[in-house]
Length: 243
Image 1 (cartoon, rainbow, N blue to C red):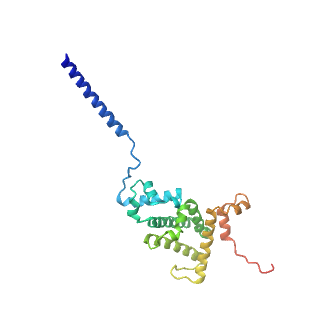
Image 2 (cartoon, rainbow, N blue to C red):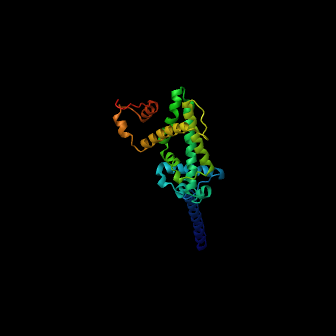
Image 3 (cartoon, rainbow, N blue to C red):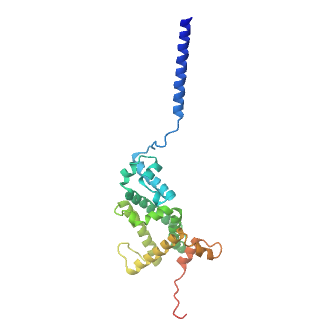
């Protein structure tokens, strides 16, 4: 009888051990993945994923929150990944600004293609300029932070040059002349600077909330876009002295 009891207890212990092992394995399989687990990327896609992560961080947390470590966390990769691809924060910001300029240029080109009249075409580019800045204030802001960027990087230089060429072409179209971005007359340079100053200044004031007072004094329902249209189409009238 003792031998039988011993065998029975041994069998029970073996079954209990198997149940414990099975339960532990099941719990392990259901255990949530650690937050530190890295997201796998194909080598060629990691750079793009880091730039997309940087854009999200910039728009959500502002320039102050945009660090290499923050971008790595956002992308779910090791902290060394941004350094490997961009070198330092200046490199990352420069490549991100290049992305911004390309988005910016594409938005303005698309708006011009959709215009059906000469006036609509003339207004399309500045409207798209302001619309992009409103939709992507973080990206727009870094694009013009020259002190934080490295323009020797080919991607940024090319994207910024393409943006200037688009502006020069738009001004040339309004002046009904061909403008070469490499060599400008004084009048051509003045026309480009005037157009850019007007739209960029308007955009900056709008993003900073400095136009609210003016808009509040205008007829009800007047939008910032309508105010911009009026600025761009109003003739420059100079009253003679004593008038």
